[in-house]
Amino acid sequence: MKKGVMTVSIFKEETINSIIKKAKGDKTGQVSKMIKDLMEFTKKAGELGITLEELSVICTTGWYISHDPAMGELMKNLMTMQPPPPDDEFIN
Image (cartoon, helix red, strand yellow):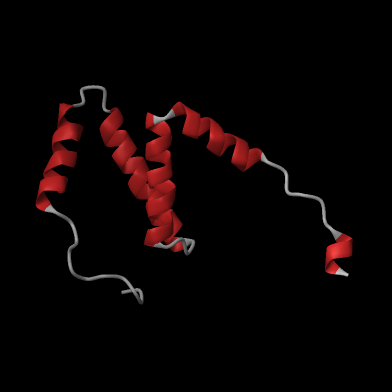
């Protein structure tokens, strides 16, 4: 077992049941695929050293963007913004 990994379940049965109900109720299969994809991506994120807290911020931001197009546009602009040019006079 990796250092720092919790061995006690932190998952609420009510939440697990809600996820299962949504997956079973989705006749398109998109929910099940999304759950599988999230599990694979988050597993890889953990392997790359992204913490659970960092992952939470990333996923929560994505969720908020799905509910607020203006926030989505703001995040898009922030992610594509070029860094400022170096200020050699400040450094020297």
